[in-house]
Image 1 (tube, rainbow, N blue to C red):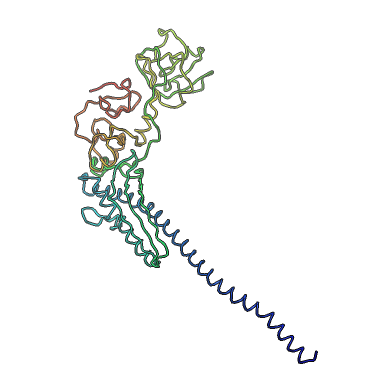
Image 2: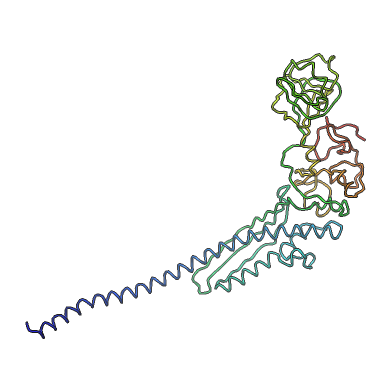
Length: 404
């Protein structure tokens, strides 16, 4: 083979080697262009999916924020006007949807109701290339629990890409439950002419008074802090305590206490203080330091610690005989299924410059014009009273005295 033939041979070989590379390059390029398009669509769809679900989550969060601002605005309206709302439901609906009261923007809302949020998400979504539509029913504002105001509404939510790549739709209910704890009680604010206020805080316990022992007893009644003794007496001021024991060796010490709850039989003629004998008494049911009433003549021992705490701390408990928070916005003082009850501390009213009246302590009774018979309660301060019918259900009949 001569030199010319060799050159031609190598040229052919080179072409044969290059052609597959060129073909592969062209095929790979076209393949990547298609794949790149698929990736773009996937990124767009994923982004749309997250945007869609983000809007749903924002609707729930925004509804709760607007709901709480609506309650704050309604309270402010009541306090500023010095009278209850005509309809708390209608006012709260208007605040929630439009951020207004009787068509006028409320300072705390600045017209930022749910509809304002809907308009903003439609605008923002449009800027991102989405068409969003949200249609809702009128919210049905109501109490669903003693400490919860609900703003539920049905809504349909749709979103589609402007290029027609996808469309998502959903029909759902926005729960929007707003806890009223931390809000001002309208009854107290209106009842004191704005001179004194209470913030709604749950007491956190289930009962106010509880019977802990029942048996035979005598010597009227007494109250004091429980001291549970199984063996030896500690060094205490006994006259301020109620002895709770099953130790018969302490029988001679009983008269040193304000009263006694005993797990053994005694000769009543030797005891001068109120006592109850319950041979099956559960000592563990008594807690040291808790306030106890010994009703000797009735043979009953009651814990009244929670009632005292409720009065001292001005905390709230659910009560079907007291008005709900929405009723309180209207200054309606009768009971409801989701009512809340609080006890007025007359000492605090006096310190705030409010004229104090000799009326039962439950706030919705104290601030009402209803003529009621009142009763004092054993184990509570002298100024404390409930109505004789005990419409709030916070004490036992056994604990009432001096009704008038």
